[in-house]
Length: 50
Image 1: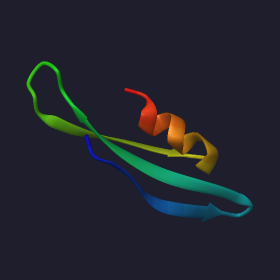
Image 2 (image 1 turned 45 degrees about the vertical axis):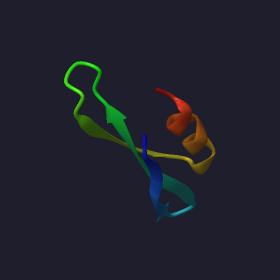
Image 3 (image 1 turned 180 degrees about the horizontal axis):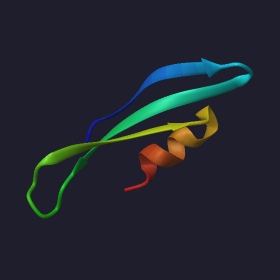
Image 4 (image 1 turned 60 degrees about the vertical axis):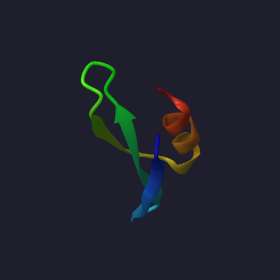
């Protein structure tokens, strides 16, 4: 399973990170991408979660 953080975004005083995770569907076997924008300290938890 591939996973990667692609961008660091700055809005005024907040620092945000956009993370994209590739997830394999158990039903069809096709891959889908899940995107989320969050604080940098939550990225590792997002990527580890299935």
